[in-house]
Length: 405
Image 1 (cartoon, rainbow, N blue to C red):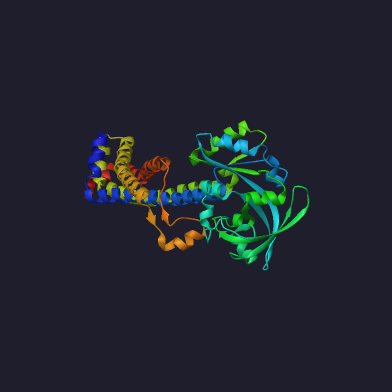
Image 2 (tube, helix red, strand yellow):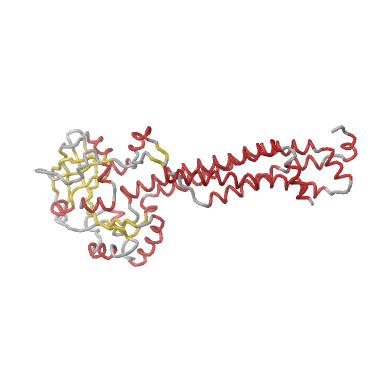
């Protein structure tokens, strides 16, 4: 009986009820859409980082991460790479040689890490070769061995494509080597620090200079980013003598940004619900005051205060029960459409390109947010009915029955 009374009460003023329902639904839709756009931007940044300079999983000698010495290489690296490429979860795997160097040009000097790579393998694993200005990622060179610099490092050295730079190296025997490279390309990723300290040279040429063909890093690309953590843990158990890290450990700022985005979006939802609560309180209070005489009559004929409170709470929950499906339906439909078409941000393409992002944004939202906002709306509806219900319970039945309204 209480539910029937509550249902009839909310539809007494259909215009007011529908306005409140639409306000809540639009709040749900707008909140989820903004979160989906923000999550899509974060996911795109993570994906671009994985595709360019991080990769899903990396393997190193345990001491190489700390000290970076030439002798701290991965034993039987090529055999390990061949085994990894047989794994159905692995899309591709490659080895890199690394050494610390001092690089200088006519403009300036800086410390740098030289990465010895095989260009064809790098193109299979990363999109970094495609981020260069000239598109010549160590493929074309004549007299001098080629080198590819990061944009931040090139700016620091005041070096441009076709300029020459000199690197000072320490070979496997401890001897110092001076070698001149020619800049064939300049790349830019979303990580300026990475660009400043990493340069790329041909692996066989670096091996010849250092008198060492050792591999210091194995980068692994997987079929799915979601399997990176479990894959790294399993691989670490199989290779206890080596250090295996997934992309979150390699670039902790990416994982931190993801967690911070979750916190900020949860706060954003709370703010939306807080704003909507004022609309619910106002509407419910108006509905209560309009029925002042009716509520007084119910109290006078024996309806206890608990049932009156239950009736008003049910009215609020019924409004939320209609608003949530409408809002979720609008949000799911919008996000599904935008996932396919994307949002064209070509007017910001130059700025996005400088941080390694694409000009088309695809929204992304985990299912947990749909459940989270549903619970928030229900809780908000219950909390918002407390004040109107308390106001109703304060009515004096005798006085309300004597009023004209």
